[in-house]
Length: 358
Length: 250
Image (cartoon, rainbow over all chains, first blue to last red; front, top):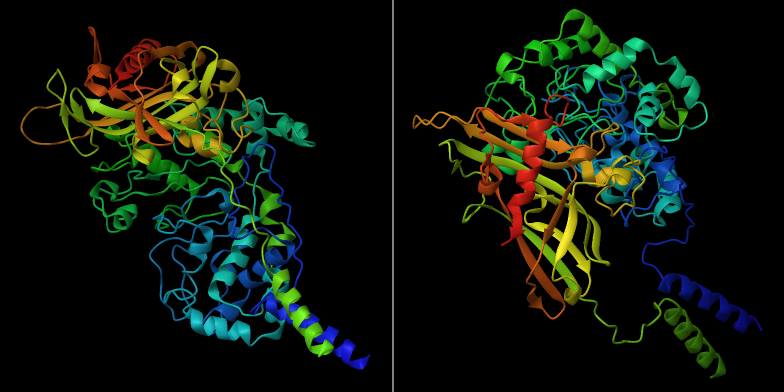
């Protein structure tokens, strides 16, 4: 009897070990994304399905300073909620005092992006996440050491088992977890969203009618300017529910390029001076502006497009008033445009407790 | 001995429990694929993005963006596809790739553009693989009531033939609006057999013809911009009519 019992135990052990190497049985709970009704579906990578456990782990990792060399920085250090998950400094400062050359991008609706960084060099969110940790001017921790720290941490070993069914932690799983968390960071509840639904005959959700009633005449007038060819002419690049189109553009900042941007990635001179078109969502919160953070205020940005456009061989042909330096808005038009840009602020998003440190 | 057999059996069960179910090899029928390519040309020359072409007026032009929608691409009751997007810079000459029988598509007709009902529908509500979904349509949709941009031509032009290359004259043609929807057709289509399961028909998009369409010429120096706005009706119509005429059999 005892031998038969031991044999059964042995059999169970064999079954478990036959099915894994470092894999431990764990059940993940599917995570249901809250996609706004006027957004397209988010396409989730087949090899990184969203789970409650993965999102929770990603959130913890995003806010954990363990992933920097001297444990003084986390991802959130340069992507602060109050700045719409960007950095209010022109350039972020790394743990050794090194300073980057581009402004930290706002982390909004990343699940719909197809390329990442200002120059688009990363083609997936998971790929993008692998860069800041070892970057000497950012978190400056090589992945080997980062993995060692995490593998020596019992809490993380448990969390990785829950999220991915393994306690062997590597950089790809860290990236997957943080990517899952970032995909939950969806902004679609600003005043603009109700204006967009109204313009596109999309049914209102609960509460939208009240927001619609609160849109001022000046905000509507600013929106008209935003999409007017003879007004601010912004809509070619900032369009749709995401308030951006998927492209790289030279928006007339310089005549010669200190930073080649997308051109350095492609090696094509026709791409020199082009950078990813960013979303305008939460633009009032995400100063400073442009790839190099050269403009501190929205007023400066509006002035750039109004009078500060500089011609160059790769300038976007859609900046049609470049020949006269810009769209030449008067003071009242600038004010109306700014009022419209303020409607893009989504306070529910920046104040969402689910995005803050656990 | 019994115990040994029991343990061996258990071990075998353990390993076999981890195997994926075997799928018996079958002989599924391979549905034929029909591909439609669009080759941009300038007259008799295949178009390249970094090459300048000379217009009838003597201007040098480099085309930087060519896109268009066709919808309800069909031959009578046989529908090849409900919607297709051509995007030269992103996907080259690719246009349509669907399952179908080439015998049903010796001719094709389509809307150049998007019909009114779909043109004003929620662009996020189309299925994920439909080119009218805003995630794919991208900058081919105005985010308010006019709907989709039916066709887009962008170019940089040197209008001064002084021997110095200076492509500082921008051309932007974005045509949409229900009133500009065009009916397009082609007959006598030839399907080339690419392999056992794929046949291909190739169309051309002739930018020279686009600029010189039986006397309805577009002078890029003076006619260089339309977004289908009020006051741009005449040029918008000429642009999309010429564009329609420029698409035909290779």
